[in-house]
Image (cartoon, rainbow, N blue to C red; front, side):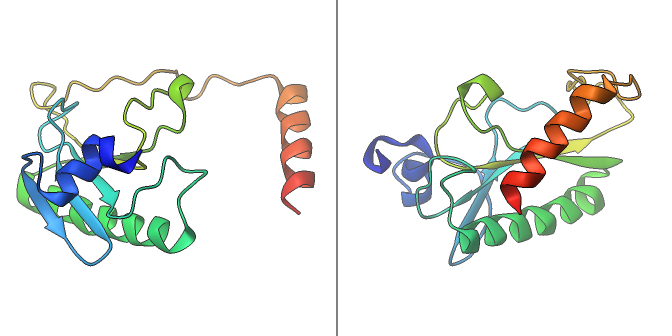
Length: 142
């Protein structure tokens, strides 16, 4: 799988990209289909399919790199905020099956920001359903 993975190809230098940052474990580069000005991706250098597959040390490294570049998006690009987004599985919008975090700078100026919320925060969910889900996940985690 890793030999056919577009992100592995980017990390290896076989596929061109606009690199933003690199360390021993991670590689950050600009997204070619940006949701906002400065939208970039952070990937582990080692191939992992998704959030359920990535080893904890690679997940930590990717998150720390995402935090570092998010800070720079605010100071260098004048972003008003930042979203981190991970999509795990095709039904959750994952299209490249190499774990990655989207670092999406957000702007008050909508000419620089094309991302819209897919749901309405502040609209209450069904309390019984929420409680059932909490109980099922909680009992499985502990």
